[in-house]
Amino acid sequence: MSQNPNLFLSVGKEIKDEYGREIGRIASFALTPSGKFDAVFIEQTGGKFVKLSTEHLQFDGANVTMTSTVKSRANSFCNQIPLLWRKDQALKELADKNKISKELYEELHHSFEGALNQLKREAQALTDEIDKEIDRCANEIKELNYALVHLELEHEIGKIDDQAYQTAFNIIQENIKRVNNEKSDFEQTSNKLSNILLGDTPKTEEILNTAVKMEEPHKESTSASEVPELPEPPVVVYVKEIGKAGI
Image (cartoon, rainbow, N blue to C red; front, side, top):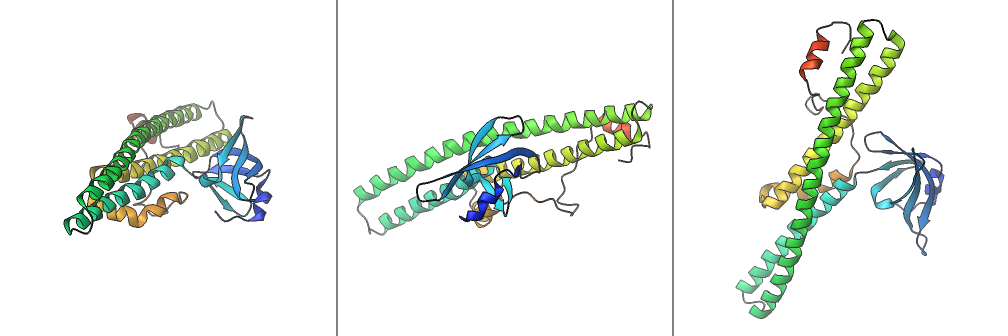
C-alpha cells in the first residue's frame, strides 16, 4: 500500500470486504512515529470499534476494501515453505561439493528443518481453518436457497406482492453469488496450501509464479466457465417447476 496523505480522505467512508459486504466506516488512522500508516480504526455496522492493520486493506482513492486475512496468510506460507525447502536443498548441494564443512551443514540444516516444520504445522492449522470456512459457506448457501424457496412459495400464493418479491429476490441472489465466490476462493486457497504441504514441485512452481494473485480482491467474471455453479437441492428444482419465479 502506498503511503499517501490522501488516505485521510477515507475517514468516515464506508469499508467493504472483497465480496462487497459492508463492514463499517473508517473512524481514524493509526500512524507510526515516522508517519507511516499502520492501522485503521473501524466502526462496524453493529456499532463495535475494531482496529485493523493496513496490511489487510486496499485503498483506491477514498474507497477502502478489506482483503481476506486467510488468503494473505496462505500466500505467505506458499512463498516461505518452498523458499526454505530450496535453501535446504542448496545447502546439501554445497555440502556434497565439499564447499562447506559437515559440522556447518548439520547446524544450518537443523535450523532450516526446524523452521520448515514449524511453517508446515502452521499451514496445516490454517488448512483446517479454511475447511471450516468452506463448510460455513456451504451451509450459508443452503440456507439462502431455502430462503429463496419460501419467498417463491409465498409469492406464488399471493402473500407477497411483486415489488416486495423482486426486492427480496435480488437480495437473496446477490448474497448467493457472494457466498459462492467466497467458497470458491477458500477452495482454491486450500488446494494451493495442500499442494505445498504435499511437496508437489510442479504445482509449487505454479503457486510461486501466481501467489501475488491471492492478494487481489475477487472480481466477478462474465465467463460461464469461471462462475461457480449454484447448488441445486431438490427444493430449488421444485421451485423452477412453478414457472413464475423468473430464475
